[in-house]
Length: 239
Image 1 (cartoon, one colour):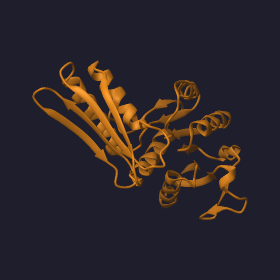
Image 2 (image 1 turned 90 degrees about the vertical axis):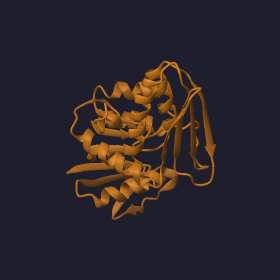
Image 3 (image 1 turned 60 degrees about the horizontal axis):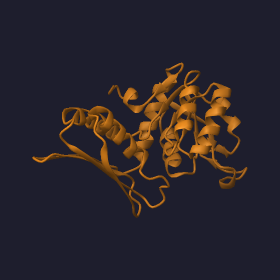
Image 4 (image 1 turned 60 degrees about the vertical axis):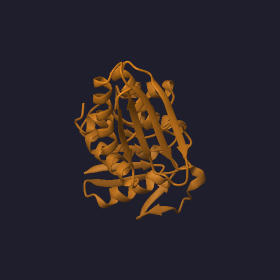
């Protein structure tokens, strides 16, 4: 049985990951973490204490982290110290922070992805295929929409789409439009336009459970690995 830790357990994603993990017999949730300002010593979820001391991850096999760039880097350091594998879904990480994750993966297994959804990762693959086949002919645009609480823009998923399209086509993505409105969970559209036609690929998230379920699939995958840096394309066998 996989011993799981979840950090940011009071956040939108953390709540759903915890709930779904508690319902899955493949997991034993052994550690729930939250920022000190958001939890008390008496807090618990389903009888599992919620704390702010990251050293508690030492009892886990895998930590799932959907937090902030700063918190994620602290968590990476602690997971390295305690040889705990990681699933990282945090967005907004800069190049230096991403490099530190890559370095950490030389000693522990890490799944790091801007989007854990199976559907979105299929969109990534379709984008790669489409960009390669339309290289040099089609102009590329991206539009993404999220809830008003999302801090980073463009979204990590939109940036990943752009990187995939540019690498596959050698064309520059002309524009990434970001919308922050209401409680939109996540919409992403990439458009390829020529003088003759338009190709549109899009994904609409109806519930956050698609990301939470994907994170748990990633946790099962990384549990079987000794070290290395993986993404959801690896997890789903799309590479």
